[in-house]
Image 1 (cartoon, rainbow, N blue to C red):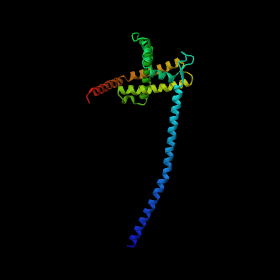
Image 2: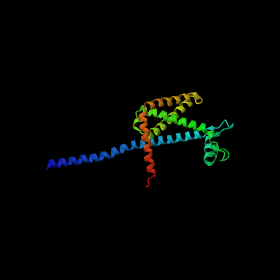
Image 3: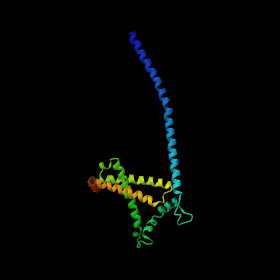
Image 4: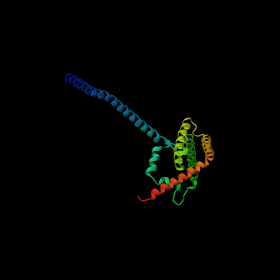
Length: 216
């Protein structure tokens, strides 16, 4: 009885000590959690401040200086396009709806198509290098390639602009033509795989259309 009593006392004593230690441990951990939350708040504030500074700098830039000596701020242009929605279509159709000037904008369409083609070619080269293009269907390849490629060209244009070569048209023509030619050469070597991907992409589009047209 005495041994069992002493053993029970030791167990109760150790349990009481553990109960006293646990709150102190949790209390010691609380300041660290509070410090991490405060540092997170500071990072969030710095991110928001940087975003505000960037947006202010972006919309405060003067554009169209070739048409006006003072120029027009980008923010004012954006506001005019939002507040006057019919002004933008008039740039394409002329003074009246009967005087369509779409043919005059064909170079703009051609340039936009060339940029998209270059972006898709560059993105496909990246996917092919990572061995991901063969795992996707044609629709997925086009979507991911275009997104990745256009982002790459956006960063490349930023770098060229910061280095002072934004007006060097030959540089862009050379780089873009090289990307398209290399992608075309590699695609020709994988034409059977590409044909299967295109067929699977068309089937995916067909299933998507059937799903949208089917009644809920």
